[in-house]
Structures are given as C-alpha cells and as structure tokens.
Image 1 (cartoon, rainbow, N blue to C red):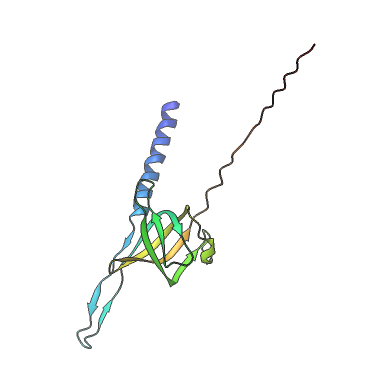
Image 2: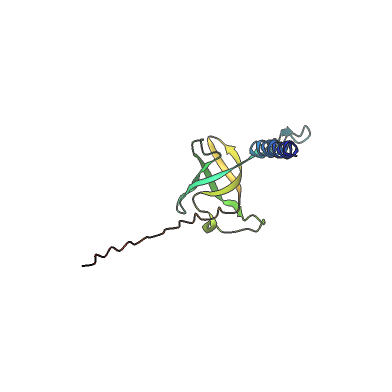
Length: 144
C-alpha cells in the first residue's frame, strides 16, 4: 500500500517537473520572408516566455528586475507603453498591481541588446507570512 502511494507521488512529481521545464523554456520562433514580386520583406519577432518573480519595480523607470529562479541573478526587463499587464484571470490591470516579489510570467522579445516585455501575467500573490508573537510574564512575590 505504501509503495503504491510513493509511486504515485513520485510520478506526480516527475510530471510537475517536466511541465515546469517546458513552461520555463517556451519559445515562439518566426521567420523573415521576401515577396519575389514586390520585393517587400516581412519579418516577425521571436517571443519568449519565462516564469519567475519580479524582484524590483519602480514606477518612474522603464524597466523592472526579474529572476527566473532564486539562484539566478536578476535580469533587467524593459517595458513600453504597449506592454500589457494581466491578472491570473486574464483581465488587464494597471502597473500599480506590480509589486516586488510578485510571481509572474513575462512574454518578451530581444530587441538589440535589450529584453523588451510585451506582456506580464501576474500569478496569485503568495500569502503574507504570519508572525505569531507570544509574551509570557512571570511575577514573583515574596511572602514575609
């Protein structure tokens, strides 16, 4: 009985690890083509997605720092006025919903040497840590 339960847990863990690996490395590749009749060139951008945490965000700047894993160094992701921010349900929200340490998935393109974000999908925020503080008071009285 315990071996079957352990096997199910290990299988579920393996499926989760595989899906996480696929989700972190999603890339959409596109091509550039030239019309032989008109000579016009059509090019499409490559869009990549990454899941992680927004490390820092300052509303007055044009970038935020994003980290894919806790061991990775934060990377600067630039955003424009066309960048869309959505909540977990897919509704568009304002940039005021972006906070440091917010889990998110970003869809970005590399333009020159910059990583430009096209869309930010915010994940459910982590529950706030609950700090329980207990105080014990001891009173000592002496009797005469």
